[in-house]
Amino acid sequence: MSAPNLFLIYVRDAEKATAFYRDLFEIEPVFTSPRYVAFEAAPGVLFALWTGRSKHAEPSTPRTSEVGLMVPGASNAVDRIFTNWVSKGVQVVEEPYDEVFGRTFVIADPDGNLIRVSPVD
Image (tube, rainbow, N blue to C red; front, side, top):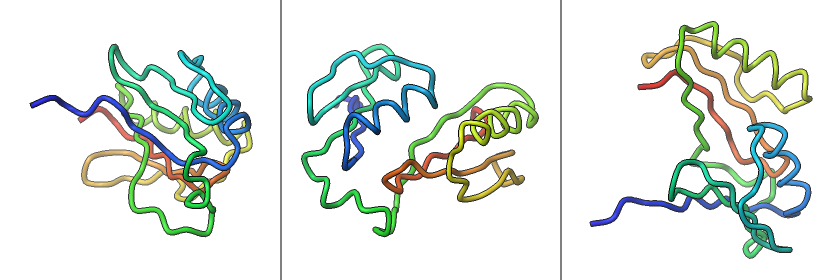
């Protein structure tokens, strides 16, 4: 069986979301169209933005999943990313705290999609 290789999130405005994620993750898209933009998260693995179901991208819609960024290093690596992202004006959902898997925090993109930073498992 194949492993998942496309992680898709709904956004209302592909151009605005692309700028947000380009700046946040400091990566460039590998494919861009007016309604679909893909970033290569790892070789053969895409993280993509899609406006095809933008009616589901309302910030008030409850989110039951998260985009995750696992970072190597001690807890201060997570805190450094938090400080950097706050300086970019992100919406903080949960400030850094210690969880069973280590230091973590959560922000939201302009469409309400959750992004969690945590240590590498």
